[in-house]
Length: 346
Image (cartoon, rainbow, N blue to C red; front, side):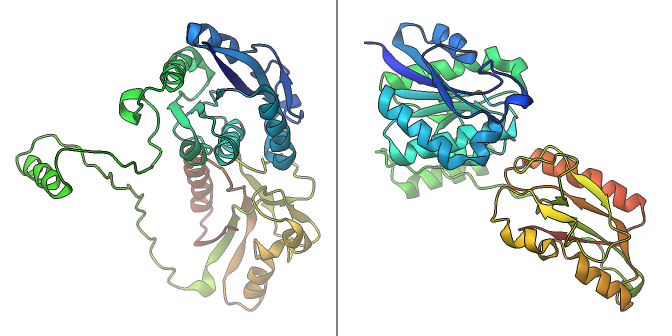
């Protein structure tokens, strides 16, 4: 008997529009639209896409409660056997939408979710804990290559077959499962040790995390003569957000002249989507303390506050973009002769 599949896509893949339609509210169509059509063809007789759930990327992330309410109503009505979302590739807001959908379903329903995204998509960390996430390429150019492993995984889930990250190609979820094995742990550990000592291949049962190491910079020799810059990932921008920096999953950073002002209050606000904006909008220097830096400058405790202020949003921003922003901003500051940076978060 064919199983029912509900497919989720954003406004672009739902064939409604591009960035100009990113604010559309969620809607459900009893049709196979965009990737849902290709997926339905690939899955064959083992499942059928019964409908496509569509929502604008901005609306999903900025109106999460309303969106999840609509999703709940849709799930209660159509009762799918499995949900497929994406692929989201490296689209940050789309990835976060797929991730929040998966998280909501895991917490409220006994329905498996399969999605796909690029390894640096900011939604991956949330998604892989709640869904089976197949690796995707950086862009939609890899759509065909991604749909096939997604459908193969869905087939196995629908058939009740055992699945594993390595054999089925999805990101490990970090879950510990109880299994029966022939050898107790101490013997398995000795076997691995002997293989390591003999330069033989072995696979650890508990992979260790890999942490990025950054060498600390040399201390400033004379802070009273130093030029200090202010940089934040707290989403503090000029009123109106002239550069349209995203409130989450940032794709860019901003640079603004602060040479003629002593505080950010009155001219700046926050567009950050990860914290309550009330107190930051009331006094943005709480997040990026320009007022205190200017006081230190007047008291000759620091040499000078750098004329430009740099800002972006950190919530959901991919590691790749964060590294890119850091290199770009760091290059400018270094070339400008800046001695130190006050870097604030939230």
